[in-house]
Length: 240
Image 1 (cartoon, rainbow, N blue to C red):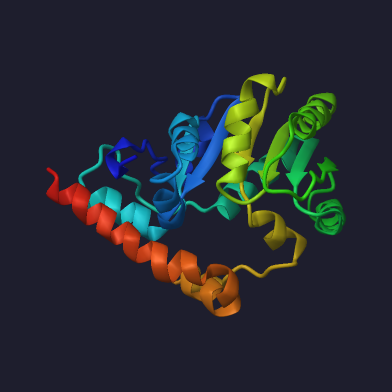
Image 2 (image 1 turned 30 degrees about the vertical axis):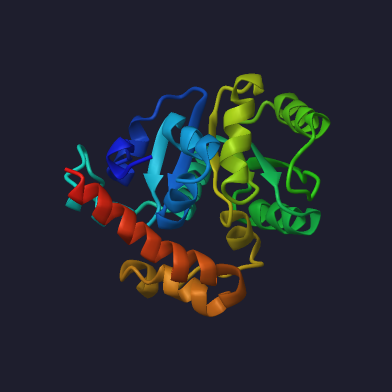
């Protein structure tokens, strides 16, 4: 997978033109781009999404530097997508399904959603905590989502697991709504993890904030994969 193969959403204003139908939204950042180089199923899932958000300034700047057609104007994080879609659903009322995370985190999401989005009915499902789901596990998840028939579906199982699961079971999901793989946003909204303050985000330092707050969890992502991303972008530039 190359940067120039990505059809990225240019700005938040494009979200208003998305169709009111079954629509899959994924995000890509420097880390996930590097992981996708060694994971064909993950790369395929990202390329097949109906909308792919540039979740990081490195992706935005690399797209511009490489002269990608319709290069994005701004970073659009999973948290931005979540806020936009939830506020939109709150205006008309409906059902939102959260698939992923632990029961305790989902309980916190339900409580906060009741206060922040009182016109949204929230349904949750916590899948088994295991590296690979069995066919029975996935069938139970698909059945739970289909039974709820949500107006919005969020999947949070961490990348690349969430993207690959959505791609593998997309045809089985009998839904007519937007669905997004948003990972850490489950924890942000539940309050179990704090997102970087606005100043850090606006200055492209959200990654550094997360590295400081969660060094054991994120050091490989930022200190190893970010330099790998720069090398991949340089190789793509020189290959022209």
